[in-house]
Amino acid sequence: MAYRCKSCSAGFESKDELFDHFENEHAPYKYGSLAREAGDIVEQRALEYGPPETNLNHVAELWSAYLGIELTGWDYAAMMMMAKIARGYDGAVDEDTAKDIAGYADAGWATVVDRNRNS
Ligand SMILES: [Zn+2]
Image 1: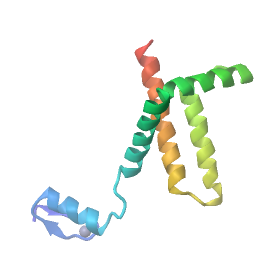
Image 2 (image 1 turned 45 degrees about the vertical axis):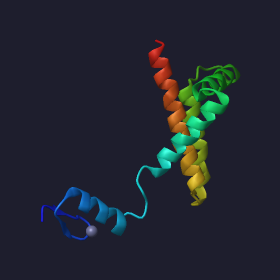
Image 3 (image 1 turned 90 degrees about the horizontal axis):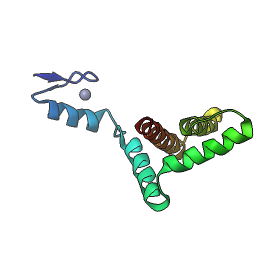
Image 4 (image 1 turned 90 degrees about the vertical axis):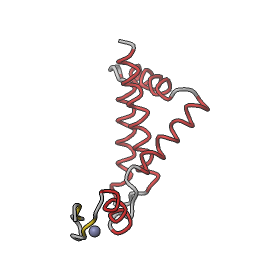
């Protein structure tokens, strides 16, 4: 057997067979599915309301003026991720919270890419 499952030691002839076995037997969660769904939501909102980086940068400008310190769109996204993370302090973490965090990471990263492109 060319490929061995590291979880149960079962052997397989091909990598594809090993992957199928692992997904069916050991991985009830499809890795990347939450991040992809969060990305789809960010993309859908961008189509409805315009690029999220514009909104994130606008919020960052308002918060910068209010606080008297310079914040970026990424700073705003990072603080929103922390606000979502704080929801889980009582031990109750749900899928929507994880999806929100992934969405803010995605939209926040868009502000960084946008800033780097324009500098
Ligand atoms: Zn296995």
